[in-house]
Image (cartoon, rainbow, N blue to C red; front, side, top):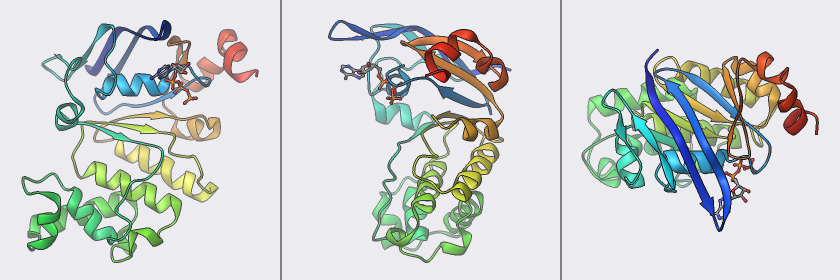
Length: 246
Ligand SMILES: Nc1ncnc2c1ncn2[C@@H]1O[C@H](COP(=O)(O)OP(=O)(O)OP(=O)(O)O)[C@@H](O)[C@H]1O
């Protein structure tokens, strides 16, 4: 498998504290990857670096077939290159319907609200409906988004990110605050999404990770402590000592 994202040798220091320490991670096209690790391991900082929010002191973040170095690019440009990021808290437009949130999010040369003022094209409607099916919200298109459950809002936001057609989606703690049924739906959704794009999930919930059934990277003190199947990494003594055995 060729790497879609190749992070190599990145380090970043905040006020003398090395939060990321010579970290290298490679993610393949259409790969589902989980990243776990104790609090302060550097998971958020890793995502901040990949998406251009934080600039590393050293190292490269290479993207796509052309191995473009993303370091130094701004967040908007990186997003346009096909990297989407889902933060923990959903940020949907609560007063709008599910349908309108999805329509506004479509990758489109028009400004988001202009899509609502003019009539959406047949292609826009089709794409919006496809995404609603993908995230499991087809039956809720005409509901006001503010009335959705927490899980449904998260799925809507994932749908809005899919509307931007990312090649890689970074998802931060999707299971937090969800009911068991919502978690199950979310696992299925992430697995399905990773059939057509790369998905990197940062999560603490081990049961959730087990259901994802994917390669796992364990971070600790800003570097990779272990990588492989969940069974492989959870049998690693260092992982047990710093993360599992606490
Ligand atoms: N802007 C910053 N200034 C100073 N220190 C920072 C900054 N951002 C992160 N850190 C520190 O860097 C380390 C890594 O933090 P980070 O948030 O990436 O960890 P994490 O693995 O996401 O943790 P958690 O699971 O708690 O979210 C922590 O010790 C944190 O306090």
